[in-house]
Length: 316
Picture 1 (cartoon, one colour):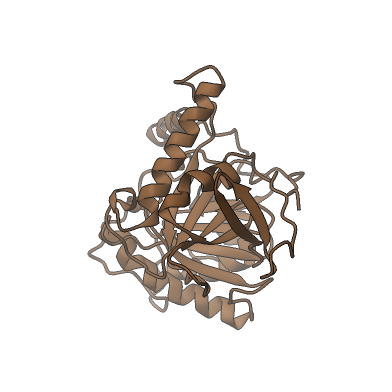
Picture 2 (tube, one colour):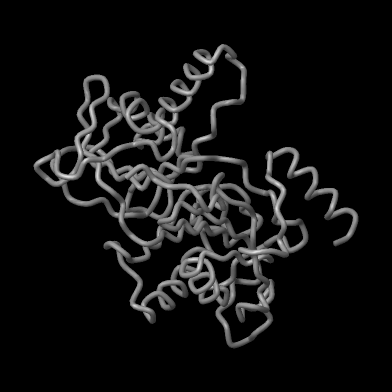
């Protein structure tokens, strides 16, 4: 590693509060160990992105992820959105982002430091997941790593949603299956009674596809999705049922210059971020990360906090 790249990595680590990592030890492995292609791929037989895309191949990927402890995803059934989802008043993201900001502001104030940074970051994105049928005008929301799915969340309920699901610490939610007639768990907050269910697939592979924000992710995501689906279907793993692997297109997660951008979230509570992912990396990502929980060193951008805590347990 040259001096400039080393200095950039050190600066990113300090800025993003990254933990010290030994990339030579488990769970990290090299591309050569998992039969993946180098980045950028030179094999003419593999699918490639259009040559006009300006994907950065020089800046280091490591520590390019802002620390966060929760990922909240709104199921929209779409794969592109307005450039800034939190400015779109027609979306739940507009109202939920404000409820999160206000709720965390109150948490900081209650801790005696209104300007403190002790409240952990919550990441909010839209996803292409198609919500299940229900009566009502609301949206489906999935909360990771708690693995909770809540249907029919409306704009008016966002403050109660924060109190019910985002204010409690990660993994502390107790869901009692069957407390609702539909088989979910009733959760009361303010004037709202939510019905929550467990999100039960084995993993979700998220691909940034936010074309209205940056063309690079919008162009690379469909190509990458096609290859990942091909690999998952060959292993009979693709689906949205218990033990399956879902693929979601998601809105802006940062680092468009590193497209394709992928997050692999496993049911064990591990979320691994990859950048400069090419279609030929699909099989390695499924076999190494989805199936075995290992991390491809050369593609690694960062992870959700606690992803490598082997002792972390969910309350239910």
